[in-house]
Every structure is written in structure tokens, then in C-alpha cells.
Length: 327
Ligand code: ADP
Ligand code: NA
Image 1 (cartoon, rainbow, N blue to C red):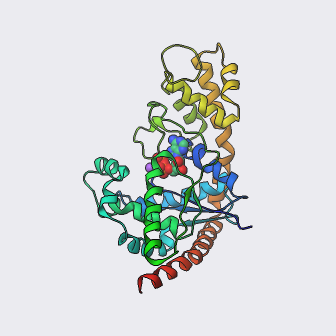
Image 2: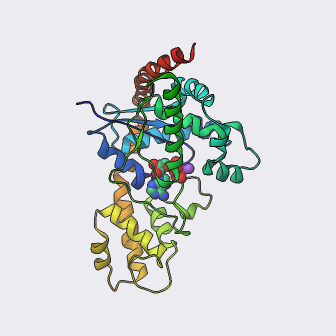
Image 3: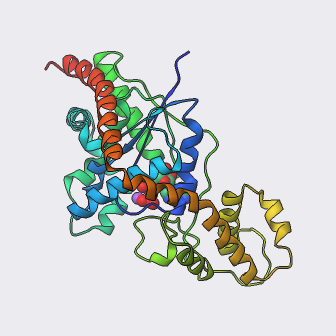
């Protein structure tokens, strides 16, 4: 039986955070034996907001290195840069012609991003969901792991695919949301009601995958705690809940076990334990990143191999689509 295909991508728009790691990357390593996964470094999406070219190139390369360091195997998975597979852009144009302005007007992420980057509300930002639909549909993807914030993107992808299939006959597989064990949702350290994000300007809100141990300990120490001194999870204690979640995700302990362990402990001792757990979790990954960085030829090879592998699959779908529309 053929393995189901999963597509997922990450923007090289900043340094990977503990949230990206615990919420996505770590989980991806658990999928690689049971699914046929494509992990795309979506650099074309990244330029919908201004990027410094030198930084963008470095961030994309770092992202690749970090994928590998976490244990995402380039033989078992297809790891590649979006910009290296021109079919993404080509299908993107075609699908633009099968997407209504009204649909794009309803996308909440566009409204959010347009508000945040009001000096640069470009057409790419607006048609971003169409490129994302192309990313997914090019590979006849079965499943897409989606967080709450991505649900609308999967919906529009399904609508576009269904519309195209309705006009031209079966062309695209209609992708479904991957509902598996999802990774922990990590919140910002100092604003624990908002998710930890690599694009956050407050650097004390995020722990980076590559942060030094001392930096990690310091950031955890400065994390917001809640009133009261009890170490337990609950809606009234977003700061402590977040630290407990981080602790559990790094140690594999359950919430109950963690709460029992810190019953009666002070915030200081608790934070030290959380910081140490994060350091212990990230240290082997960081070590591996540093080893991989020395091996430039190997990284180049992985990039080239991924692009070839993805390109072959993408060409199959694009050729089919081009014929159908009359090219
Ligand atoms: P960011 O907001 O850090 O730029 P993205 O939106 O690029 O992250 O998401 C990349 C992947 O990381 C997605 O799979 C997303 O679900 C996951 N992710 C991002 N932030 C978190 C978080 N704080 N906790 C858990 N998972 C996260
Ligand atoms: Na983001």
C-alpha cells in the first residue's frame, strides 16, 4: 500500500523558535516512517514582506540545517526550497485565474499582515493563499498538518481544487487536514496569551533553537509568572501553564507528574528546572547543527537532491494542468 503524502512548509523568515521545534519539527520526525513527506522551505512566501537578501539566504540555509539536525532524514523525506521548483510559481499563476477576489478578501491572515505591514501591502501578500494552494496541490497531497491559524488556507485550497476539478475533470487530489498527535503549542514567555513566534520583535518572548544555555536560563528566569505562588496549570495562570507545557514537552512527563514534582516548590526553583530541561533538550540538536554547518558540500547536495525529487513530482501535475487549460 502506498504511503499517504504530507506537505508542510516553513518560512525562512527568522530563527527557529522552541515553539517551531516542539510544535512542528519534532513531530515531523515521527511521521517520516509512516508517510511520504515533503518539507518545503517556503522562501517565495517569505518575500511577501521585505527581506534582506543576505539574511534570507542565510536563514533558509539555517532552516535546512536545523531540519536535518532535528532528525528529518533527507532520504525518507523530500526537503527542498520552494524557489528551486519553478512549478510552484507556474501553477500559482494558473490557480490565480481560478480564485475569486471575494475569497481572498475573506482571508483573515491577509488582513492581519496588511495591518502589520501597512507600508507594503503588495499583491503577493494578497495572493499568498493561492501560492500556498499550489504548494499543496502540485504534489497530490493527501494530508496537511494545520494549526488553527492555517485552517482557512486549507479550506481555500480545497475550494480551488474542487473548482478546477469541476471544470476540467479529476486533476487534483483534495487534501485533508492531518489530525494526528499534534505538538505542544508554546506561548510567548513574557506575553503568554500570544503564541511564541519567530517574527516577534521582543526577543525575550522567544527561545531560539540555537540559543546558548545561559541565554535560555536567563530568558526563562525573566518569563512572566502569574499572581499566587502555586505551580499548577489553569486558565488563570497562563505564564505558569506555558512553562509547565514547555517542561512536559522537553521531558516527556505528563502535566500531572510535573505538577506533583513542583508541588510546594518556589517559582525560582521551578524556572531553573524548566530552563535546564530546555537546555538538555536542545543541546544535542545544537551540537548536530554545528557539525552539519562544517559540511558545506553535504548541505549543497541535500538541497540539489531535494529540488530534483520535488521537481519530478511537480512536473507531473503541472503538465497535466497545462494540457487541461489549453497550453
Ligand atoms: P512562526 O510564527 O514562528 O513564524 P510559522 O507560522 O512559520 O511560525 O509556523 C511554522 C510551523 O511551526 C507551523 O507548523 C506552526 O504550527 C508551528 N509553530 C509556530 N509557532 C508555534 C508555537 N508557538 N507553538 C507550537 N507550534 C508552533
Ligand atoms: Na509566521
